[in-house]
Length: 210
Image 1 (cartoon, rainbow, N blue to C red):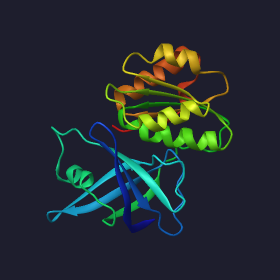
Image 2 (cartoon, rainbow, N blue to C red):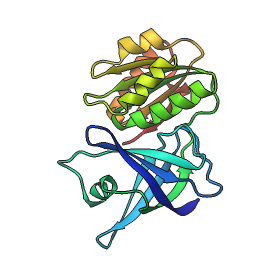
Image 3 (tube, one colour):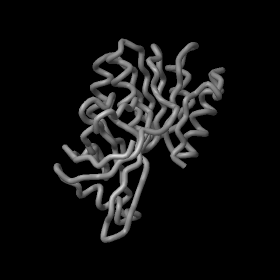
Image 4 (spheres, rainbow, N blue to C red):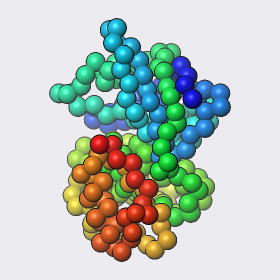
């Protein structure tokens, strides 16, 4: 699906990180773990980036989480950070096959920008009555309020800037569906940690951000 949609809210959710809420176009059906392409013209140049949903569903609106390194931010990143309610963006999607499909027991491993997918998926699985564990690796965490809410509602939530292996061994149990979202180095660390607890890495649903 291709559509032009309005921004309904932009809020800070962590260091150099914002959550952008967008109107869902008619017929838009996306699940946690899927991603969309966001496009816009900035100073006459066309830009496009892919962002994973960070909302538990896409009913009426959906959310993406955008983290920007201020030392490396280009024109499009700065444009996204400066959006206000009522501004418009072009979207395409949803894309991706590694998403939540009503699994009853999920373990979500998110690194850096993977926190968006982690909180959205965790919230959806809890809402559906599932068992949820989230391990989030970052030295400057985002979405701390939503992570705290997940914990209060019964999810196991670990925030760390260290090694994943010990935490995975504490929360992973046979039969859990593992989800992994993050950059390549994190993805490899997460898959190694899963293999160390005798989980088959090939069974994990993985979105590698490059």
